[in-house]
Image: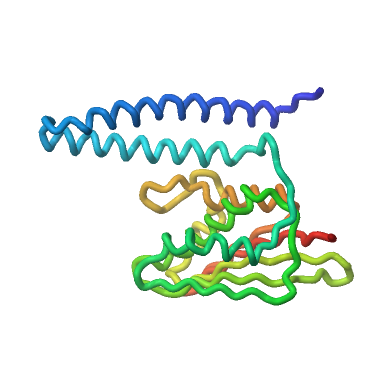
Length: 228
C-alpha cells in the first residue's frame, strides 16, 4: 500500500485534533467543577467564564480543522437536496437575525446527487450561516434556491444550490482570500466555512463560486447530478 504525503498530512491533522480535543475535554470538565463553586468571588467567576468560552471556541476550531482533511470513510448515497434542505430548515432559522427572513425556492426538475451526506450538510449550513450573518444586524432576505443546469453540448446535468443575501457585501480586496483557511473578518470566527465548502465541491467533482457587490452576495455550489 502506498502512503502519500497527503495521507500523512491527513493523519497528522486527525491525530492532533484528537489529542487536542482530549485536552480540551479536561478543560471543560474541571472548569465546570470550579464554576459550580458558589463561594468564588465575581471576578474569579467572570474569569473562569472567559476561559470556558475560549475552550469552547478552541473545540469548535479543532472540529472544523479536522473536517478540512479527506474523510477517513466517505459514505456515498443518493441525496434529494430539496428534501434535505427542508429537513435542515430549522437549523437555518437559528442563524437569522430578528429582521431577517429566509425564503426557499426549488425548481420542479431538480435531479438528485450522489454525495457524502455529512460533507454536504456541513457545506449547506456554512453557506446559509454566512448569508444570515451578513444580514443579521440590519435585516434582509436570505434566498435559498435549487435548480437544474445543463451543459451545452453534453448530456450531463448539474444540480445548482445557491444562497443570496442583500447584506453589505464582501470588500473587493477580500474576495481573493475568502476561500483561504483561517481567513476571516468576523470576531471569534474560525475562518473555515468557505474552505470547507470548497473542499466539498472538490470532493464531489463540482464547483463553487462567490460573487459579491454591496447589497447582493451570491454563493453557488454546483454538483453533478446522479445518472440513476
